[in-house]
Image (cartoon, rainbow, N blue to C red; front, side, top):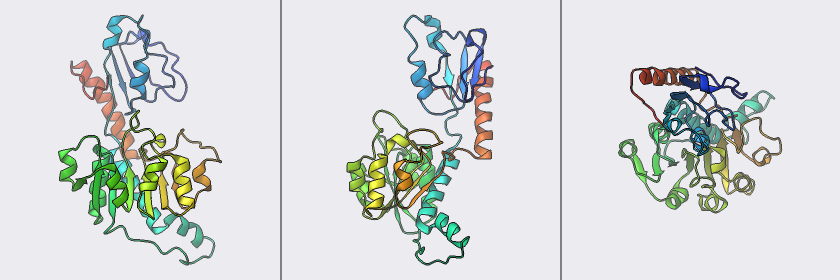
Length: 289
């Protein structure tokens, strides 16, 4: 069993029967000649899958059948809750209030808005998007949804499916929960930012490249958008100090911590090792490859 971290793996997988990967290095050099029988990785995205698919054609055919399992869903609640938290911060100026009160200030200029009664648009109604919808509904919001597939569970959570254009035009708050892939990269483009409701709030706890950063920064500075809450950027933190968001108005940013709670990380570890245990018993679960 091999655990990967921020540095490349140094133990060749050719001597392993299985590997548990906590965070694969980029690029992932351990697939092409690996003769292990099973891989369980804690990340839930598809970068690992993409690296695996780059294995050379000369790799032994038997190695093409190595099952790769992940821990999808482990941080559903954590990410949805941070999306809600960023929304409340944007509406009630919580971060700004914290700074003002520490310097003898008052509520002057910091009167906020209530979440109750707002229309929230969920872009991407997977497990996390559905959980976010449930939380927004609990606060008294109407929830619109856009996704390439319409899920019964989302409808049961009170999501009204509409086109992306209608969602952007109608939502007071747009919360992005779609995965990053070729079809969603740049999905919230300059054109689509321009379609958003005047004074809307944008929240991104998914992946940075889904949103056009400069377009969002421009919309904040010219007053098109009221606020932006983000946990993600084009690259992992630390983020360059000259990033467009840091000179834009009304941005609440966190350093990719949405997934990082004690509960979610414990759940991730349990799921990763349960994948291995199930494989040892002859069952492959949570398979991504």
